[in-house]
Image (cartoon, rainbow, N blue to C red; front, side, top):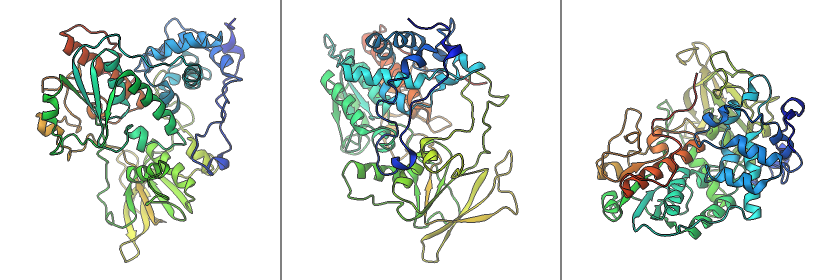
Length: 491
């Protein structure tokens, strides 16, 4: 039986990782296989089964976290899987990639270590696959409606799976040569091995979802308005892939690249498209500009490619180890975190990050090749360079990981459907994910702006529910965990 006092007596234990230096010899996931098995029941037992679980509110999917914690503590794995899969289409992805705002909102985290919710979720998801609890769910009957989903990232895939299971004939259109969006080409395999993505896509095909690759909606041979004419509804889930840039002296130097260009080529190499990456960090001095997850993925990739040196620039001050007063529980705080990539670089002892660093320009060797990145200390408040603090970091490869500013404007989907953009560059939609074009909906980062994978899945599920209501004339069989204007918990 679960121990009602385990949260008082059992310490928090995280899933064990492989040795950091050994990880650099391959591109496999960083965690030790089976590392969760001896400890996961006791960790689930730490859940307080709160009367008002704030983890629910922090998770946009509304995951039934206390429910499946209690079931895991009592070894009811199939029932736990049923609870988890009721709210999350892809827990094997979120259990690996989500930063777990639910843990920040755990009631136990007010004055102790939070429950390892993310680890428990991942173990439930992996066991569900291994035991056959996560089976294809084809619809009992078809509705006769046809839906096109443009984009195959987590939002598009979640929307497609929900719509297929509701009985609508659903086809996913992806401009790349493989399905998956950023899950395929943006996330390195040491964070998500691609066989897990292939397994989920095989399930979706077994349920009836269709996939078309190399289908660049918006191009002359596949205009968006013609696609809309052939379907009863369209979901646009093209992401926010317009990379932010730096208009600085020397930006045109050979050796300055967008992070997503670098990561995509590395992932394509892992897929077998290239014998070695056409843009490799091997033997090079690398400077990564940016402080987020994409920058950390570049760091881990560069280390595996045997870069001579890697430095990461973060314009923000180094965060505190504990919550700041202006970021109280239950919000997800900005605290000092060491990702697996930073761990491989030697952090926290030898952290590759330079905090409060703003990029001033790029220096060349006189022949157009990058030779260094000029930086300065960022002034508090306005982030402008502080006079007298400039210095140059030697570099022959600079990667810009500055985030994204909405869907690519070169894409003609919005023009062809008569859609508009909001002030942040995202596609305009109402609270129900609908655009001004009849039967056209927007899900994921294309409408919300760059966000977390858990928000993308929640958007896909909710947009699917909106499409279902539209097709059925107001009634719906699908759950909608959020609205288009829902936001994360904040102070």
